[in-house]
Length: 199
Ligand code: HEM
Image (cartoon, rainbow, N blue to C red; front, side, top):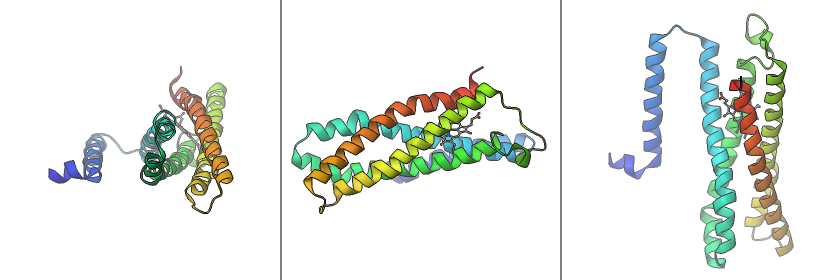
C-alpha cells in the first residue's frame, strides 16, 4: 500500500491491472475476434496517448508558458530545468504512440488496404473518409510540429552555447508551434470522433 502512494508507476500498474482483468473477463465470455481485439487495443492506446498529448498541449499553453512569463529568473531556471524537459519527453512519447496506433487503426478499421486485412472490401461512406483523412493530416502536422519544431527549439533554448538572439528565436518558435497545436487539437479530435460516431 505504501508503494502505491509513494510510486506513481505502482499506481499506474494497479490501474492497468484492473483494466486487464476486465478485458480478460470480457474475452472469457465472448468468442474470439483477432482483428477486433487488435483494433480495440490500438484504439485504447490511441485514445489514451491522445488524452495525454492533448492534455500536455493544454498544460503548456494555459499553465507552463504563463508560469514561465510570470516568474523571475531564478524560478524560470528551475522550471526550465525540472518541468519543461519532463513535459517535453511525455508529449514526444505520446505523439509517437498516437501516430503508430493511428497507423494500426487505419488498417484495422478498413481505411487503407482493407482487402489485405479483411476477407472483402470495407465500405466507408465518403463523408466519413474525408473527415477522417483531414484529421489524420492535421494529426501528422501536430506530430511534425512537436518533433521537428518544438523539441529541436527546446534543445537550443537549453543549450548554454546558444546565443541570446538564437534563444529568443527558438522560444518564439516553440510558443508559436504550441499555439498552432492547441488550435489543431480541437478539430483533430473532432474529426477522429466524428469519423467513428457522427451519424
Ligand atoms: C493529436 C492527434 C490525434 C488525436 C487527438 C486523435 C484522437 C482520436 C480519438 C479520440 C479517436 C477515437 C474515436 C472513437 O472511437 O471515438 C481516434 C480514432 C482514430 N484515429 Fe486518431 N487521433 C490523432 C491522430 C491520428 C493520426 C495521426 C492517425 C493516423 C495515422 C489517426 C488515425 C485514427 C483512426 C484510423 C481512428 C479510427 C477512426 C474510426 O474508427 O472510424 N489519428 N483518434
